[in-house]
Length: 209
Ligand code: SF4
Image: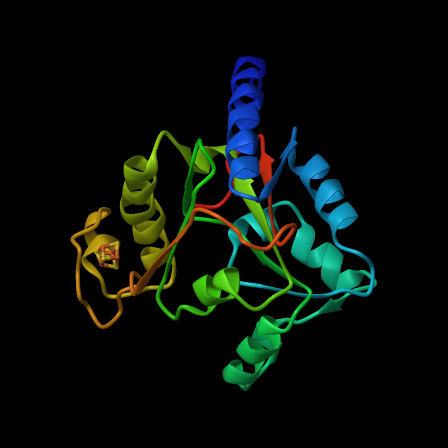
């Protein structure tokens, strides 16, 4: 990452971390993917049960592999034929790993979901939620974050899953009601009542979509 961009990201991350603190959530800043991985592993005690939604950012820093190979009870939903059983196990996990579709510089997280297992686990269930968020996801305000979620993240995800939605063909949101829509639920996480439940590692890199 270019030094000038890194300096800007570090300064912006300090603002985001302040915003998270004001919302009873904890923020960290990692200078690169390697530091993000080390930090994430230091926050998850050995022996913890851990699961995740479909978060590219978690894969990109190497966290999913490290947990699978390490001394953790990693609940791999793809390994379960019974998806409902895997989802129910996720709600009882010690840690749920996720990224977000966008966040604001004052610490609000935005997630959209089709199946809604991800947004429901973020909202309630797992004892801890750990977000891995590239600085490319940080937007000026809630309006900017919603626009990013709908016009950047959703079209790319719809395309990657081969869904029949207007955004997968045109690259931007048409506020569709297609049977394939991935915009069934919008979760705006603006405060956590539970001290220490939600943490965010901001990474000085472009991660996910
Ligand atoms: S509402 Fe429809 S068109 Fe808009 S981003 Fe979601 S799936 Fe795509």
